[in-house]
Amino acid sequence: MENTTLQTQERSVIFASSLGTVFEWYDFYLYGSLAAIISKQFFSGVNETTAFIFALMAFAAGFAVRPFGAIFFGRLGDLIGRKYTFLVTILIMGLSTALVGILPNYETIGVAAPIILVALRLLQGLALGGEYGGAATYVAEHAPMGKRGLYTSWIQTTATMGLFLSLLVILAARQFTGENFDKWGWRIPFWISILLLIVSVYIRSKLHESPIFLKMKAQGKNSKAPLTEAFGRWGNLKIVLLALFGATAGQAVVWYTGQFYALFFLTKTLGVEDKTANLLIASGLLLGTPFFIFFGWLSDKIGRKKIILAGCALAALSYFPLFEALTKFANPGIFEAQHSSPVSILADANACSFQFDPVGKAKFLSSCDIAKSALAKRGINYNNESLPSGSVSQIRIGSTIVNSIEGAGVSAADLKLKMKDFDKQVSDALKSAGYPAKADPDRINYPIVILILTLLVILVTMVYGPIAAYLVELFPTRIRYTSMSLPYHIGNGWFGGFLPTVAFAMVAASGNIYQGLWYPIAIAAATFVIGFLFLPETNKWDLNHHDEK
Image (tube, rainbow, N blue to C red; front, side):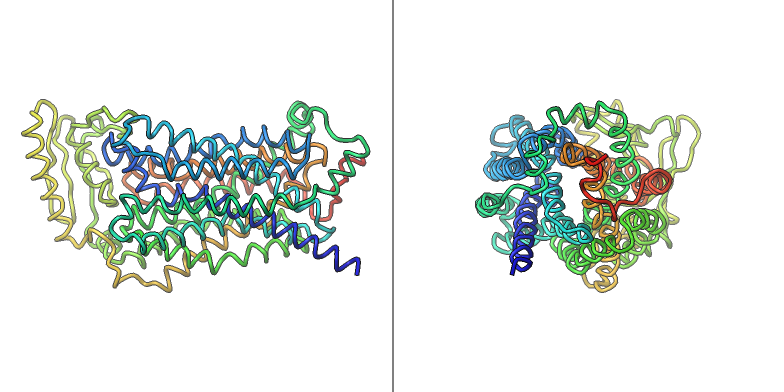
């Protein structure tokens, strides 16, 4: 009878912690899923390319502050307890998300709109910085020996389930509002977060504090200065740094590549319609999510470290063939055209700029910049070839040559006419060479695309399923919340959160649609080496082993 009651309590802890975290990730992911629309709503004062980069940077801003949330809320969690701390985090997350849903756009209140939006994103990031460490620590400290990987793996499903839920709600809102979705229907998923917030707060308010934390506090062993103990003493700081570079950095880039970058690649690069892309991603998530539980369970049996590092190694080796296959089966037209009619820009390299305009005021008027802009906005893969200094740039599409134009010294009216004619020539040449403007829905190989996306998600589950238990076990109870939260959120907030922006910039600079993959590949490979050489296995460790030393 006692065992049955204990198992019921453990299930309640897992359910309450996981459900609340699903809702919190749902709030956070809405922004990423709606980045293209948000760029038009809140950054319409700049050109289209810069607006999208701004939207990605605002998305990344929420990730950038996550380590600061980890420090602030982690300290509170180690001082006053796990339960109350992650109750506060969900309140902050839910309210800031709801406010995005009622925030006036750029056309209504001007520059105040993006400023307020970024401020709300920062609040979301701070809250999420404190959320994960609390939920993972809370569940792990309730789990029996030999089941921490299995129990905490349910927490690991919450990020994917949160993304999955956000995609479903977005699809429903699109269906409900039709053509009005881009105008006001996109706000509905943010409004729904108010209902999710109420449910989450109610569930979490019923939880009891972690028994391990209460025992430590009753014995007077709790830390009076968690930050100093966690980061001011080399013994613990060394483990924090190794956990970052040997585990969470690689885990983060594999996670964001398999979920977010795959979505960006489908929509922005391959031209798959938003609704179709969301359904494809949702299908991959649905099929792949059970593997979080499988790898969490398996880590209890064979170890956490080897599964995490195997996932990093497989990702580094497979990303190029997987994304090339994604191109082939999601947009066969563009894949065929790339091989039959490759595109090149012939230009004086000294006349080409790095086209990132942070304030929306720069004018890229050289013939090289105009040519690159024309291809970049169409998601066309191209090579770079040199021309003598002073030459006017050209675009070679198969055997067709389109001469670019020089915009410097030309009146605005004349430049507009020349640009219109140039764009038409480029569009006509691409069409003749077989380059489709958008992915043809009738030519998408849906089963194979879903299979590829599922494989990407399975790589995510390998690195992410065991990571919570691994981080919890690395650190002592008295500073566990603080210590584990920082490497997790630097890894995921900085290495992972900036992945879409960095990858997008690498692609735009090089012309190679796969160039951005070098970012996650390099970090995953580095994590494999560092983790293999310097990190211990922890699945057999007792959670109090540090405190007993």
